[in-house]
Length: 428
Image (cartoon, rainbow, N blue to C red):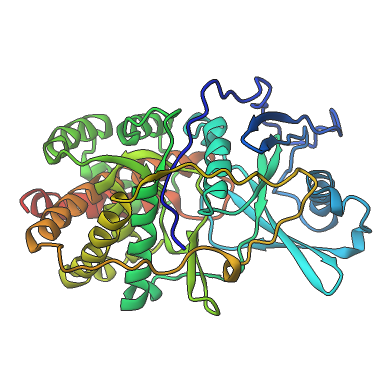
């Protein structure tokens, strides 16, 4: 079932001061003890296990395995005594910010799985890892996200959600459009975190990525891409300032957003016909229009095939369902979950067949065409800000990331689409 408004009011909550740790390319065996920060909450406690290990994702085979296994065995105590032969490690495809590994432990008849994420380069300068951990814990407690097991020096471990990630073709299906709209509406309408500043983080985040953009692009080998980028004559900081002034006129509300609702971050469980958003690395309070516009941009995939951008009819179907579900859930009474967090020694299955993500009963009769059109305008205009954000991200990553991907070419496509559609979208 869908939960009511989840309000996490915990006055005086603070994370341990030693939560942040410097990154290193080598394995730091400074300590094999995990340091637990904990705070009483209702009938249970929230735990923040941390290890002083570092994973070098440039390694392969047994050398990488030797770095990963001590982390998962320490963070998941039931695995601690398992022989190393009981584990299987597989790199997950699709991520452009981080490296992601699925770790399986053969325990009994059924394998237990978790995901281990190694943070990407430069992300520490933009992503607040302390806030991210709080968000993980809160969303899990509200049954809107998987269990968070703990951190190591340059990454974290969290629950594996059974199911499959969506792809860009799935996003064209009416059934999927409806389910994703419901899920995003649920997140926006029911998650309230009073101990967080609810000021939208979009423009500050863009500014941070702009600061990390290299001043010299001489490292770019594709001279055609470089010439096309220079031809744009883009001043990122000035463009962001100008766009902000235009979008401020929309008065888009601040809601708690995922901010990266791309297909790879949406897990679908076919047997239970349920869905869950994962990887809340970029989650924060933000403009409603940005969340929706950014999601529509994701229809084009990593290749940014603009022909796949959702047509007006598809967007209207999405927005109609979003508005109906949002209104239904927002009108319910606030609710603070009193369910205890799992003990640190537990392994928790994240099987959506046992979870809460089902269709909410919400009538679309009261949703007006004017409301849909206004939200259509808001989403498409904020989609422009999404191009600036991920374009700046791409330029920064083009110099720093060790993941094999054409970040500079990706950024160029983002900015080209931005300018191609700016006038038409702002005229809506």
